Length: 414
Figure 1: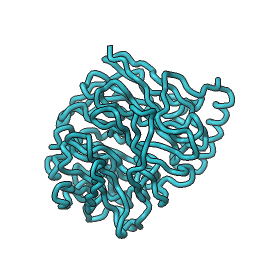
Figure 2 (figure 1 turned 180 degrees about the vertical axis):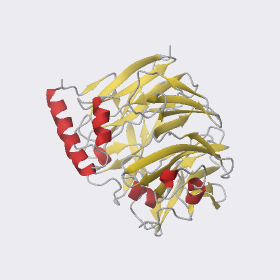
Figure 3 (figure 1 turned 120 degrees about the horizontal axis):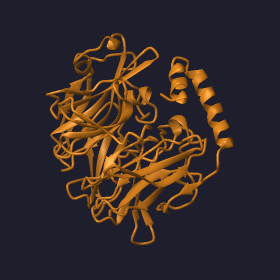
């Protein structure tokens, strides 16, 4: 374990002091470092104007099936609140027409990390998009046909949408907003604010075709499944639901906070909430993605090895430690054909964040970008690299030019 990690662990129980010491250390290291704005063959897609542009999370693609059109959000400012109530405009970019764009909608529910869950709707990824919104005093999701401009309003927001566009899974965005800043929505006050372990649903199934909602798991289902002593009197939440490619199983992070200690484990489940499996339970797991219906790549901790990227086989204790040289957290995903992996890093001592493309055991840096201090902590701009649908381009959000923008890097597959 490095000296920085040891200091970080020692300061966990004194968060106010940790924040001050962290900032002093960051500024000192940056002053002493070589100044670099960006490196790599990076192409800006969004306009350089008075607005900020970004897409959201790493498990979705902003590209349609043709590779011509891209989606993103446009807002005035992302440096004052992690989940503002001001509307964000939904932008459709035509990359075959000098990146011209049009405003196709707006949303009142978005955050700086995951946007509004804006994405193309399967199975064709060509005409319909789906995004979360706040209408008639409640959270919802909206299916918008870009050709007819017809809308279909669904009764709940979405978190993970099936590839066939038939259904989605979702969670409590108000509880998430309180317990994990930058990932939930602020429009509604959380109804479970005084409950550490609510005897209430925490994962729902939403039928996109029929608008039917079905709760499939409660907070108590997680706490009562392979219970650990640290769960007693702890505050529980769930986050990062991701469906597997075929849509018959999903992963979810079960997190609980006991005093100043935080714990996370990775649970997999059938889409009806049955057949739970505790896939990784060594206290820390952050970003994950499916490689196939039965394999999950995750940045996690294994007690016998430490932190790193692990390829785990669902419903088994089998795993492979991937790329041991990558010891820092990132947001991984496999290319559409499964031959490549993209992941990123948080800013280093020089305030530079990197994007890596990995083929087998070869880790190649394709971009490095500067992160200004005003985009830090909960207001940070993670790169969240994402593939296009043909696997020859990657886009990411960045602030190296002073505001959030959407950027693209081409990938040579051979």
